Length: 502
Image (cartoon, rainbow, N blue to C red; front, side, top):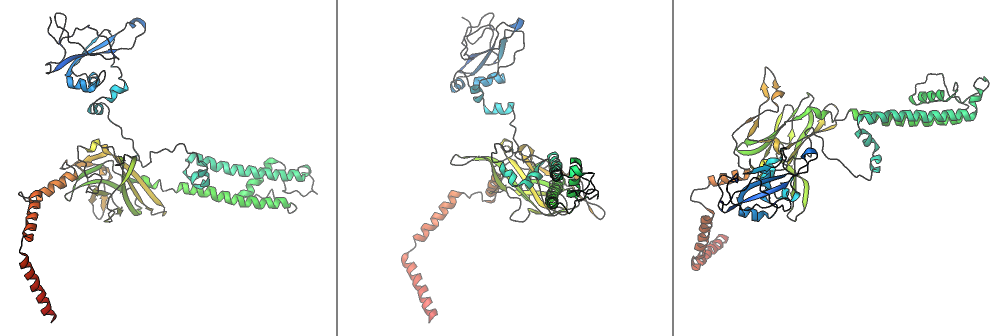
């Protein structure tokens, strides 16, 4: 007999659903020990055989991949055959020996979904980092697309806003097409009037009075339509007083032309003067920081205005975007929670002449009350900050947006100062606008810091139980007093009241 716990390099075992348990086999010449240096107590050796894909051509021979490892019996029983924590061992390659019956380098096969679901969470997190999908991008654009909108007629009810929201190339195309179509439409009507009246047959007849002089075809009718709608009036083609239908058409085209001009020019003016471009000069810091300020843990970010013309009535607000599940089991995706940045104290109303650091105090009402430095990277949340105000030059309302995900929140950092005093003025160095420096900050959550502070303020001998016992003793002493003494005292008080009345 050979020592137990050895495996032959070429030993094959029947497969069960792609994975099989190894067997305790004797070890003698030609056999070898598993890769594990010291067998754990209560462990056994497992052989996992994974079938490899068939190769074409000269390498069409069947191949197989064998792994041997040692693990606790409890893990194997908890995982259950044929999947479980052993699948994670195949991925991680812990204490594995491989025997490949093929000279070709073989990649590890993809596990079934059941095996992938049984992988430990810490392994899956280490292998692939979770990518947080932004709700609002850094440039302020909302990362939301509206699909399956069946009631598209609603866009036509507000045609002006629809045209303003279009991209520039579509807006310019519609602008040109509207004018061209109206000119062609009325040009066709002018040509039909001249054709029906017979003006085309009496072009060279000086005794004939046409509806429009010098109109001899569709091209001249089109040019007359342009002159009429744009009020150019070259003076070569003129309408006569012998054509009442032409006079009516002239009035209609003049009115409709004015409406088209007002609509299209107004649309272009609003699109040009949109305050979205003003928001390009309102900047947010690339990172948010968490550090101590006035003895309290605070979340901070910085905002600034690059223009000399200021934002009037500027205000700042912040939202926490995080999915939640209610106590009733309802799942609310992308739930929005207000983050107080000075609403009750008036600090949210800004005088944005120089860059300002916006601070959120992490207290019991804050959604970050129980979040520590170690827990912050594990959270799936997004902070959306919104800066609003009126443009000083135009008086239109402007809104600038940005967002911060957990990887953009730096714990234990502060912003580098950017304001310096020069000779007769203050200078802002925007090269340091996004820079931060590290500072000493506790890694505990605000809740844990508050608990430590409350314990430090109490006497060493004080405890909740002793305080309750002391209160109970006082109550028993008051109840144990002689009722006759209390009656006498009450009588004395009554006598004093009667004497005072007399």
